[in-house]
Image (cartoon, rainbow, N blue to C red; front, side, top):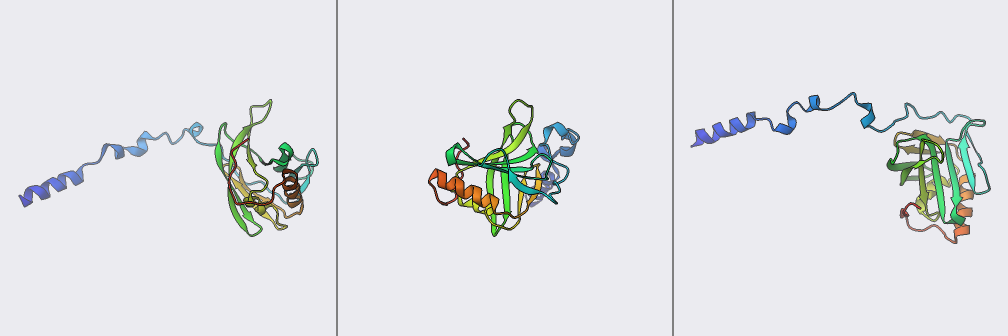
Length: 185
């Protein structure tokens, strides 16, 4: 009886479950269309600045004379703060934006947004201006913003993001509140 049990265990141990048979061979490793678009490198932000970006309630970050890399906008009469990362992404993509700096480490949901009139998609998040996680943007020191496929963007410290967020909070009648991600507008 012991011999039969040992023999049965040896036979079972020698079996490979069907899911592991030639697993690597069944994967299409060279099919790049199946994965997300990824930027090769993070952009160089040496010399980049914060500047007005099309109105009193929008500022952009980028190199002078070039397309912006990042934007903050107080929209819907202060009811939301839009954060846009000008990096191409896939249609319908969703991810988390990491903000690291100014004494904060925060993560905010961010989605792909179709650029009007074009076949391009960019990352955009819409948040309640009173969300305390946005405090990471309000310090005077540098900040790193990382988005899936968009690389890490190093933002130079400036009082401009804090001024815009505070203006947005005042116009919405809110003050910083407990962190909660509002639903996309």
